[in-house]
Amino acid sequence: MLNNLEEEAVCHSQDPPIFRAKQMIRSGPDDFRTLCRIMYPDPSDIGAFPHAEPGQANSWKSTILATSEFNMPSIRAYIVAQLAQNEAVVSEVPEVFLEWAMDLKEREAKRYQELMSKCYRAYAFRRRPPSYSDVKNVPIEAHNIMLVREHVRSIFIDRTVLRSWMSIPSPTSCTQPSICQDSLIEALVHNVANPSPGPDKFIFEPLNTNGMCGTCHVPDLLKPVKQKLNLEIDRYLEGLNFVYEDLPPSRAWLLQSRAR
Image 1 (cartoon, rainbow, N blue to C red):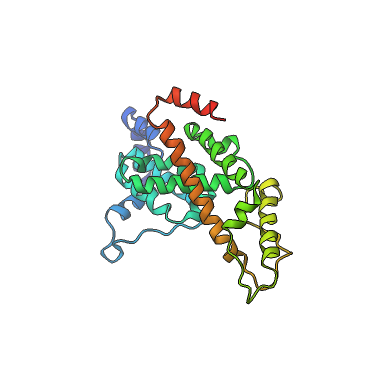
Image 2 (image 1 turned 90 degrees about the vertical axis):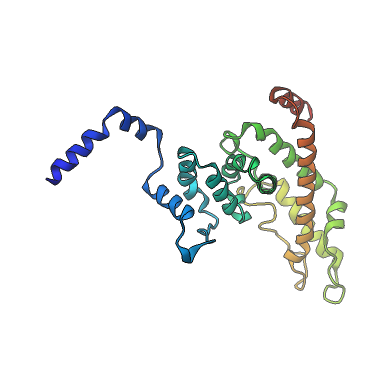
């Protein structure tokens, strides 16, 4: 009897309507179960969401694809927004989140802007330039990515700007504050100018700061620099959007090409 049931199932799976559905829907049962858990959570898990760590974003691709196949734009936007809360997850695969960000644009404008900023920061701070595979699915954003990246790198030409952004080590604990600042700045500039080794790492890691004293902490000196760079990226992006947002795509692309 079991054999008959399996044969019947195979037979029906070849029926034209079912066969066409199989071709159109690429997500699987696990994706559907995940969506059901999100839409109809257990009472004890209300408000909870599966936690994502760096390296796990790609595992959500099929589930997010399922939201498109089942026409669930709100659920899709919700999942993307939850995953994007961890910037380390976004920074690892910004090209994936740039595609997903479009789902937030109309529904959650604030989160959309925050996610776009995180994606651009990842491209700007990564030591190697974006490859074709990084931007092939986001051609409209590709040029802006390069503009932002080059703008950030131009800041490192003037070391006095970086020094003005950096915290001044306390004189009670550091006897050579200017030397410690300069050592950190030189390490940053070196990483900006030299993609390897570690081309997939960011300019903030690793930093060769052998000239620093033993009491200064790199994260403390680096924190305000990162904050200023983030603000500079947001400001620059805002300027690009102001120039291009009201133009037809073909005209916007032409002006962007001439902007450099």
